[in-house]
Amino acid sequence: MSKFDHFQQYPARGLAAAESVLLTVWPTLTRHHDDIVLIGGLAVHYLTRAHTKGWPGAVTMDVDLGISLAADDDRYGNILDDMRGLGFANDPEIPNRLVREVDGLRMYLDFMTDSGKTLTGTARVSDVITSSVPGLNRALCERRMVAVEGLDFYGAKKCLEIPVCDVGPLLVLKLNAFGGPRGRRHPKDAYDILLSVTGYPEGAAKAIQAFQQEANRDNPGYQFAIDALKNDFSATDADGPIRAAEFLRGTETESQRVKEELVTMAKFLLMVR
Image 1 (spheres, helix red, strand yellow):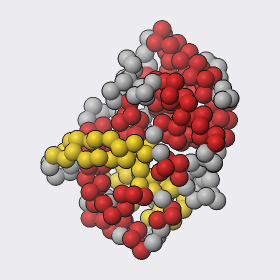
Image 2 (spheres, helix red, strand yellow; image 1 turned 90 degrees about the vertical axis):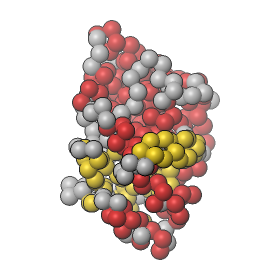
Image 3 (cartoon, one colour; image 1 turned 30 degrees about the vertical axis):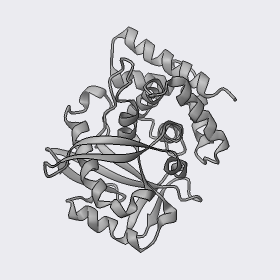
Image 4 (spheres, one colour; image 1 turned 45 degrees about the vertical axis):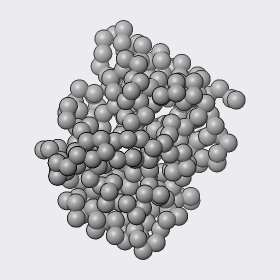
């Protein structure tokens, strides 16, 4: 399992272990750097780590990488071999997921792509089976370079510049992950949506504006994101606010604050510019 129902269930060393995965994998993918972007929970962490506004920071147990389908050529026949050379193996339960033990924890590595035709399911990029996710091409376009420092699998200290999906496409991806066609309605995704807006370095207003601009960027996941906001985040008793509050398991006052802030955030995200 790479996601838990509650913040407190995530081991304290989990985020550092995920960083270790990223810092080990990234140099091995050097020849593909122009075609890959970091998404998911680690992207939320790097966008918000300095501005959490009093909320607990992001947590994760996996590394999600978006990869360009347009880059499909013989180079990509080597990615799976390269990852296996770093000790990763196919997860027996999910064929498009790689897994490796790090510091006693099972850590996961996922590759995802935007197939252009298939909004859900999987797509093959040469020998790599990827999850097909609407809006990933936008994530590849809107990349923010972030300094990541830590130790790789082998104990070597690394400081690397990693391209991270910026907040507009990231919110589309997270809203799809929660309430899209194959949304998993996971409490962590709902909390990540709140954290992505409130902890954005340039402020919540800029994060909201970046999301709204996706309406004019031919993002195939945008309408699904809008539907998720309307269906799942527009009232304090809707799935999104309830599950985000349950993820944090704070006091009654803290839970009510989570719900109210998510509803307010959804209201602004839905405003037509």
